[in-house]
Length: 466
Ligand code: SF4
Ligand code: SF4
Image (cartoon, rainbow, N blue to C red; front, side, top):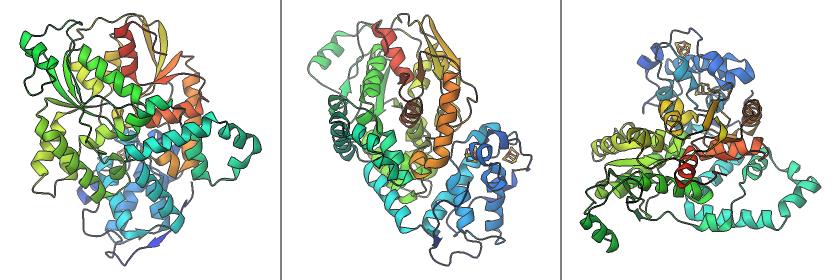
């Protein structure tokens, strides 16, 4: 791995290279005893064999920069940028080093104190002007559909023109999903009532309220009132996952509220060190969900969930929002966590299939949610769920990493696809749209790749999941 994109110091920062606004904590750094147990778990160390591309090496660099013994220079920025933020090292570390908090404090330092090259800034600008905006994504999805349906993609591949594009644009093109137009234009209903025909009995009052389209008086039998975060990429490119989530939750006796006005949760910005932008989006989302008074806030995107659960930390410096952010974060559950909490009441039909289960890093390592997806899938008769070799290794998606760092992302994607194939599955399940796109791409679309909730939905409805 090399210095990928260059740049220069923005201004003379503090003598050590980090400024005084939340540099990586010396206490957290001192937890690292340099044992190296995390090294085999780290994808960038596995690919490069270089200490500076390992968790231990990055922590050591943070210490040197903190202490003024090294500068925040191009090599250091490259080493931090190369980190996928997969947090496999957090799971692997026997000393409980909170590498997640360390790298999350470094990324904003880089954004504030390092001037990226013009082309790097332009590409990142394109990403952050597109992905957090569902309306813009819908336009992109329509253009993508035209591009694919009219055979332009095939023609460009045949002529070899695409190979002449810069690597990042090639990666963007290659990841483009084949989305049916009607799917890209569908929206999650704002209110969906708990169903009465799958083991729940609703009161007469509840039925009357539902028929009147009324809200605020919940049916006495609703097991939970759930606020649903619909995700930006998820709602446009994977509308079917949101629909399956609503069907499963209502079948399990929950009322679901998915406010149309909700904006991006800020996860992409936060993972990229765009701290102010992430905080602004977090405040907006809190303002949207707070008045709803829901019991639980559910999310089916692992990357968003890991940030939503961290809102308390993200807004810790904001006296107006600090406590509200903590209260919001305390309600957040991945959909698999909520389903595991609820004893299944909707009958499951058998799904006779063998599924390879890819654990999304932001669910398994960042949120520590590992058993719940297995338990939930385990409720489906005749379904065989197999772990894939090197299960802890990131697939290379990592938010927008596969667009910004296409080289290592491609190696990791191919490796993941080979490991998936080795289990000879009928399909793959994973709880993150980025992983879905990345794995689909590297499997050459030879296998269906689904969100686990789609399998549960199919089982409840008694249909084939693919
Ligand atoms: S981060 Fe943990 S596992 Fe890695 S070197 Fe430090 S103490 Fe050891
Ligand atoms: S977050 Fe992932 S890529 Fe980064 S140091 Fe840890 S294991 Fe390596």
